[in-house]
Image: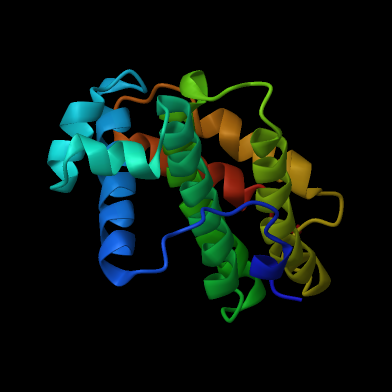
Length: 188
């Protein structure tokens, strides 16, 4: 079973091509706006960035919470797809590639988490989707002898999440420290 088959949440995109383009443009504009200004970013600005009217935004996302949740779920779907895309690589490279993609998800998650409804079952489902996507890569790398046998996907996700959440001097330092952590997963 591929990891995309284990996805528990998804963003429902419109069927019509033009409506789907508007929907995707709104998600991309919202992701950028939320990253820059937090989840309180102006909805009018998001619509403008997407090249649509505010009515189109509200037709697709009736509330700010719905938009924030959709951006979050879309990012989780991307992390799940990245696991499937990496699966064809050798076991160590597949895990390493996916974990580096996961780091960028952490940045988006950090920007969105304050705007998410903590009571939403979507948060738990998203976490389950990420774990289900990464676990086959970890297990495969363990079976190949590349990764320590005692590592669990929950340990790995928490380790990378914690490190990626630290304030670094620059992206190079963050990437170097993430590489140190990932290298620590290697079987010795």
